[in-house]
Picture 1 (cartoon, rainbow, N blue to C red):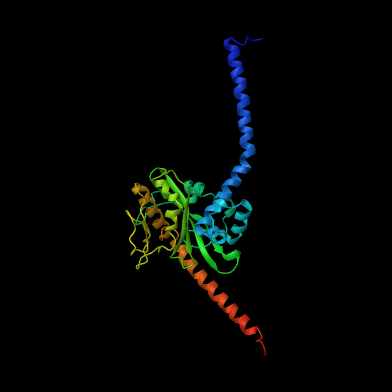
Picture 2: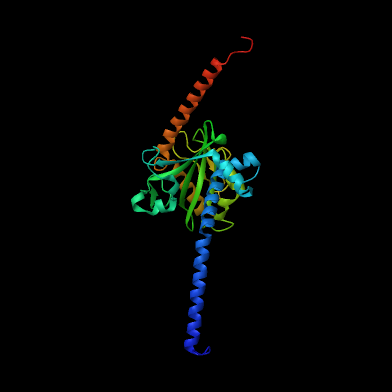
Length: 288
């Protein structure tokens, strides 16, 4: 038997400890994996709902202050769709339950290069198809909002978030960033609720139909319907947010889809009005 204070004995004990600790860490990682996946899923739902402003409208507080059951219940208002970015058509062949934005964007076979002109989000590639989120009140009736995943370069890395648009598809409802590496207190202010609230009601495009929404250098002019206050001490992050939002709402991003979605919303409104009119005409009037 090896002596405890001998070199071989020390190596043997260290090896046994390493193996035991490795097995414990591996077992914990496997056991906790379902919880990690569930937390990621729940965080995604929170950000989508907050971008659309639904928790605030319904409960007067952000999604982070709601229970998991309340989040799941509100998320029934959201309809997920896959969109071919080049054509703007719904991609019904894609299994949307398996969509992972970061994986799709980095895989050469499922993404396309970003050419950089005239709009550039600072990234090299974008997915061929993206998952978008349509919001209907209590899951029924006309489309009230669409929530679009967005991403682009900030100062220290990629900003990942969601942009919600009202049903006219030209007015911003809200914006959230769920992952970034910006400096706390500077570029990290993209998470500040007061700053994000300024996005509500911004106009996406100018009179020529060009992406115009932007983060101003300093306080935004009250006469500019497309500007939000700049982030103090974070010029590069501010410019990055401007670039990524303008890229995604341009024809290089969701432009083709937004044009077709506008027709879908108009058709649904016309169909709804016709159905309502038919129902009114078929309902006997009191006293008739």
